[in-house]
Image (tube, rainbow, N blue to C red):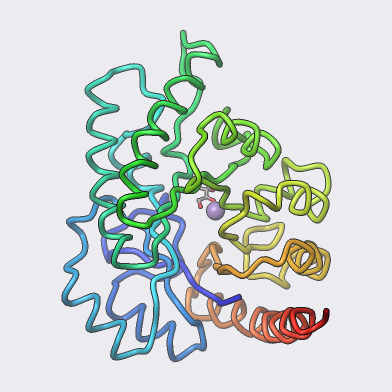
Length: 282
Ligand code: LER
Ligand code: MN
């Protein structure tokens, strides 16, 4: 398990949900603070100059954990279940660019709110069909680049579609693609899932990525979520992926990022030791 923090371009709006802005400075800072990687929140692949990014990552010995797409929805109004075929076509075009980029950086693209919702005048079945069709097209593109496309269940106050992990697993089984999966966010799970640990275990086969924030969406440790329960559940499913701090930056993003890594680092180190010990057991 490795730790990451969410970053975006310097002009990203609040809806990007990132801790730091400005790619180069954020990568350097994340490395100094002790994170292993950065999660790139992007509006489109054109925001990234691959050669520069490669150099900044190498200089700081950092990795990209995942490419996330909240701004594709919030800023550009693009999503999988849009009733207009032209908008869906544009969504596929933008996601294809991000998938190609992930082929070189991180190997994971997330569809949070951009997976769409049940719109006015649309039935749930119609939204589901559009979602499944779009996922299939994009998963096939992603497979050719060895990329995984993950959906993130998001709480009901933000979206009316795929709110908990059970719903995520259920709809992904209709997508029928080996490179789709779930990106779990424990902040949303605290609102939507019956028991966080039990839901992580129940849906463990699908989980490929995890967002960590506390109940108040601040750094882990500053709210009332039980991160030991969460780590125990991740251990039970032998989770080997990233834990990424997607937290509200508050007045002082540096302070919040520091709080998060100070809490996460020992937790992850202990986890990694135990997972290693388990693996040598018969
Ligand atoms: C994005 O990762 C997320 O968690 C959402 O709350 C954004 O709507
Ligand atoms: Mn999230």
